Image 1: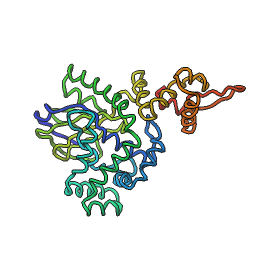
Image 2: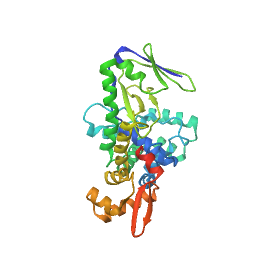
Image 3: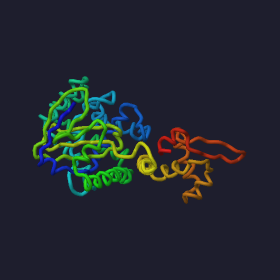
Image 4: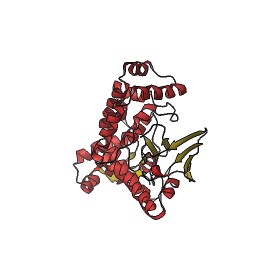
Length: 323
């Protein structure tokens, strides 16, 4: 169990905000491991292509290969307060500015779990590791999440509104206790159910609570480095229920693109290309292109009735949109 003692000064500095760097790392982790997200499925060819960039590959090489294990804290700096349009840029600047002693320490923690590739050791020795991984993260973001971030952030903000209402009604302790089944708030301390023991403390330090969609349903507690205390928890409602389905569909559009996401959500019943073209105000060729992508991804099935070809969501597609 991890026990984190939280003093009153730190409790007064609790805030809720999304962490784009944490979402980026979550999506990159799935792509690097060849795994599927339990809600959103395959990260897709754009994510895999981005991994061919040597700087992005450097980021992937320090992530745990089996989905569990230590992720260097420097990759997920605390999202700063202020204008949201600049949060990711500020986080990547913080990654690039990580002191060499912190880089060496965190890579040593990684090496205690798994061997570090020669490229990682060479970059750390040259003092270029932090700058290179910051550029690799920026490259991956532009290729995969930049266009859909606003919609994905709406999903995270929906969770924050729920937590904020709870905060107003019941207080910060009730919010902390509601974030995850493995997390509890007892007598001024956070207790996290883990198969090992660790005792930590927050003393007059800001604690950021960051809902996550792309690391869902993981819980991450990051409080070792001063000024970088972040508790990342699974965003509410991505798993079940009508409201969850609405938020999931918005997030699906964020990841697939608004047009492709809208088409997939509209295919609960079989429709032809002409039907979809009229319903969405799109050219038939545009609809055909997007349907082809969805078909190859296994998210829709195709049937023919004489000369008419109709498309409908597959079982996999139903899982993605939450139906």
